[in-house]
Image (cartoon, rainbow, N blue to C red; front, side, top):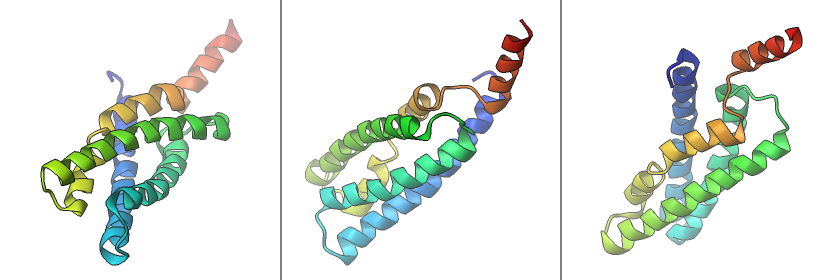
Length: 144
C-alpha cells in the first residue's frame, strides 16, 4: 500500500462498496419490511443485487481489469460468498442474541468482511496490479 495507485484503488473500492452497501440495505429493507420476507432470505436476495453491481463496477472502474470476465466473476463470487456467509452469521447473532432490529443488524453485518474482501479481490480476483503497472511490466518484458 506504499504506492498512490493502491490508495486510489482502495478509495474507488470503497465508493463502489458504498453504492453496493446502500443497494444491499435498501433491497433488504424492502424485502423484510415491505414484503415480509424472512431476514436470511432477504439477505440472500440483497446479496444477489449487490454482488452483481459490485463486480461490474470493481472490474471496470476500481481495478480496470482486462482479464477473462468469466474467470474473474467466479473468483469475485467466491470472495463475495465467503463475505456473505460471515455476514449472515453476524446477522443471526445480532438479531438472535443481541436483539438488534433486522435492518440495522444487516447494515452492521455486511460491513464487517469488507477489508478482507478488498484484499482478496485485489490480489486474487483481479490480479493485484493497476493497469499502469501491468503496462509497465509488459513493456519491460518486451524490451528484454
